[in-house]
Length: 87
Image (cartoon, rainbow, N blue to C red):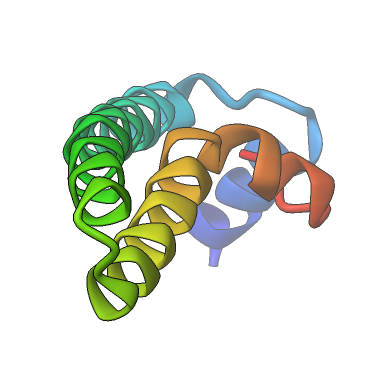
C-alpha cells in the first residue's frame, strides 16, 4: 500500500525522468520513419518522371501515390503534432 502511494506521489509531482528513455525511443522511431519517407520520395519521384516521360498512366498513378505516401512519412512528426498527438 505504501509503495502504491509513493508511486502516485511521484507521478503527480510532475517527475517524468523515468519517461526519458521512452521519449528517446519515440524520437528514434520517428526519425527512422522520416528517413524512409525521404528515400521513398526520391525513389517515387524518379519513377514518376520515368513514367511521365514514357506516357505510362498506370506507372504515373502508382508513382504519384508512392510520392504522397513518402511525403506523409517524411513529415510524420508535424503530422502527429497537427493531429494533437504529442509525446
